[in-house]
Image (cartoon, rainbow, N blue to C red; front, side, top):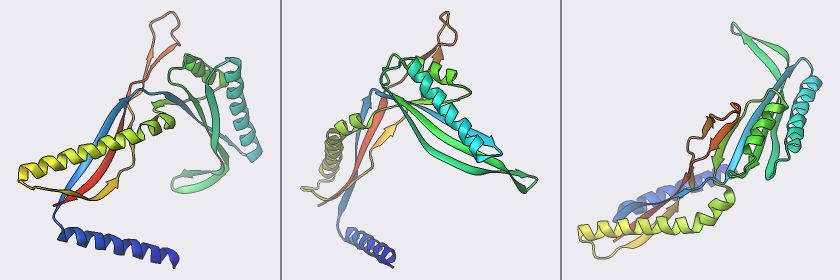
Length: 229
């Protein structure tokens, strides 16, 4: 009942705002701020899966693979990294054949993440440690860390607001509107555009070595403003 009343109040407020906007002359503008920022964080994602007729067996193998990876990273003496294990689950292994389901033991799953600095000279060692730990595939992506994004948040918001203001003033001047004032401001969720990650094998004597080259990334901040006149 409480949730229903809350939803009803939100709906009524939305309708009231919409009706108010219909009565007021408005200039609606989107303000945008974009920044090219160097990637400063690299994340290796590894998804482990093990099937067995017994829960204990599946869990033991999964735990052993995780320990092997942790040991390999320590052995390589890699600096500046975090190994994070999450999304652990054990489910019934349900197999479908010819439209008929059959339970066949259990499947254990575990997600691992290795987070490091994008400029860390040990990134190649992390790749080698994953390969050494066993039969593991991984995805690697680069991003701007949360700390770096937060440090740019205020500056980009100001840029987006000024961008919206300049557009509104240009429209007003072009249409001969003497004065405008802010009626409403809405903020969009900050966005981060992920570039394609490049992994190239070198032509050096070691064919297994991988050249990892992250590109700069684009941060986007948007605001939506309504001016009245």
